[in-house]
Length: 260
Picture 1 (cartoon, rainbow, N blue to C red):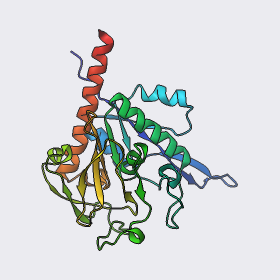
Picture 2 (picture 1 turned 120 degrees about the vertical axis):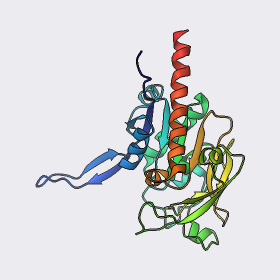
Picture 3 (picture 1 turned 135 degrees about the vertical axis):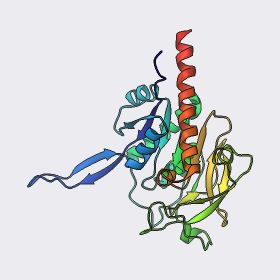
Picture 4 (picture 1 turned 90 degrees about the horizontal axis):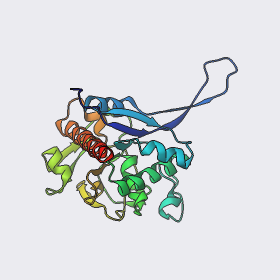
């Protein structure tokens, strides 16, 4: 009897410009994902695959249809035009239009098909925008708070603050806690939740730190970075494990349908 095949999890690429090491060489674009995301997925039992940004719509859909789950990672700010903001705040960092469009399309397909979905930091915000929600473009200038949400110079696993989880939420059931210490590296946040999303966690200042979509088999997003906490944090480990288990179940059910 063959062992079960690990579920295939798509991780949408981020593009970074790197300087060529060749004399006189032109700068090049590097496409990939931070190792912590991939390591966490592999350790939880998944096979991660990088989803490039410049696929034609039909090719992107073809790749999507082969996936058992999707993870949207952290990264740059989303173009405010996508959630109807009247102007770009001065602190908005360089946007990635191709990544915005790719991730929004995949998020909407995931909600339609019931594909397991996990959004982290930027991915949490993308999920909200894809489903019609809005964002605060800059927490320090738009919200009154004494909580530091962006922590440059701190270790990636630095516990910046606590989040309060809704006791009845799937996230609280996974974590086994309703008060969770987390890291924090963001200057934007969910303002109005998207359609069909429910708020499942906040910081003490009211900033939305997690949402989920009850209509989906598994659709969670968090504002913090569990991939950096994974090596030593049981709640982060449980989140990735639950996500991968949901992807494995999705794969199993799809194969059964194809076999009938």
